[in-house]
Amino acid sequence: MIGVITPIVLATIAFYLFQSGSQSEPLLYAALGAGLMGIWSTTLFGSGGAIQWQRWQGTLELLITAPVPFIVVLVPLTLATAAYGLVSLVSTLVWGRVLFGIELDLVHPVLFALAVPSAVIGLGLLGLLLASTFVLYRNANALSNLLGEPVWLITGMLVPISLLPGWVTPLSWVLAPTWGVRAIRESALGGDPLPAILMCLGLGLVYMLLAALCLRHFERLARARATLALT
Amino acid sequence: MTALRIFFIGGRISYRALFNWISPWHYIPTMLGGTLFVLIFFTYLGRFTDVEDESFFVVGNAVYISSISCVYGSIMAIANERFFGTLSPLLATPANRLALFAGRALPYIGNGLLVSAFGFAMGWLLLDFDPPLSSLGPLALVVTAGVVSCTAFGMLLGSIGLRARDVFFIGNLAYYVLLLFTGANVPLDVLPGWMQTVSSCLPLTHAIAAAREVVAGASFRSVAGLVGDELLVGACYAVAAYALFRLLEAEARRRATLERV
Image (cartoon, rainbow over all chains, first blue to last red; front, side):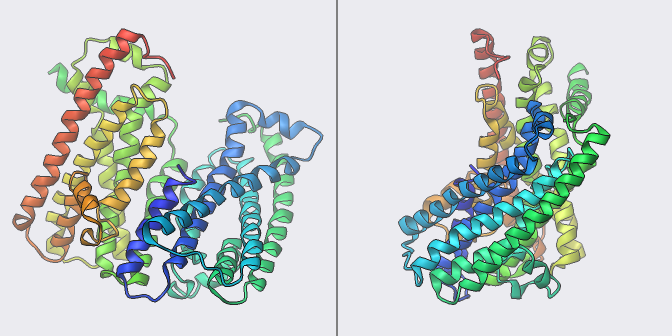
């Protein structure tokens, strides 16, 4: 549902608005943006869910007490949820091609093939950072319901960041989806996607370091407060 | 008298029981925060595409976001009885089924109105939305009609929960179908003919159109036809929901599937 239907509905809304509106961006701009929105949704709910489901099933305590660092367990989970989001990108592109005749004419096909996995890694590691907070706060998964649209908006997935208030711009720079969508768009529609690809991967690395610090701290607090098993 | 008690007090108690887990930590991010960002996101998308003026998107989305309560809440009002294992004792009582069923809708209507009012207030505070004061009364009536109608739609989906196991898939699907088809964001005349036909059979479509006219200065009398259509759509869903509830209740008793999750 999150992976396919949601991005298709959002893409359809965007296609109709772009077709009947006065802006000059091609429909492929909207298709790629809607696909990235789907990747973010699956990452957000998948990463939060990864912790919450472990908590509900009573396996979170076992994983935390195992000798393997918890981050080693968590990284593949969040990357997998982000990778699953690729279904969204493929769905919106196929939907756009079949129903709206949108051609996928890539300006830099090789860089596009690099940009997509870079965006997935960047988004997945941002999901890791979010998931690390879910270890401590049992209600933190409610944040998943809050963080979907704000990230869609301030990372320029459909609406250019220049249209938003000025204070949003620096905020968007520290979010990997901003660079992920820029990398994918510039490789598909023209431009220089390499800086955006590197920013995406660099931010991913920073998120991983921050997540490792957060996890160490939150794990200790959760053990001290005995909140791991609380649902 | 007993039926009224079941309707009002039973509805309130069921809401408290089924949502005993909800706290401000859940309610505020989900019902108010999440919906506020839906409103802001689509209003900015509207600004960018310049299809209609800002008020079009604020009104459309402020009415639409009530569906988070009307659709999901109503589904959970019925389906969660099964998940919590309380459906069998509930249906074993001789309580008036219509009162029991309809009473459950009240808290979700109240929540839907609250969410929608919050959306309008935030539209006024954060976006370029400044409706005339004289429009607020008619607007409240129009939104109430939409919320009631959408809750009836949600109760129909909830009734399906007596049979289907994954009702949240149905809820998610309905939530996004309403986003696309009701004209909350895409003007109906832009949609293909078959989609416009589907739109006219969905809740909120007529309420959103009426709300836009009221905000633009029309009187309640001039949108009475749209409000009537909205209530008619809602009445059809309410009848269908109750009929399906009774049908699936009888079948679940016969097949002994009330407790299957």
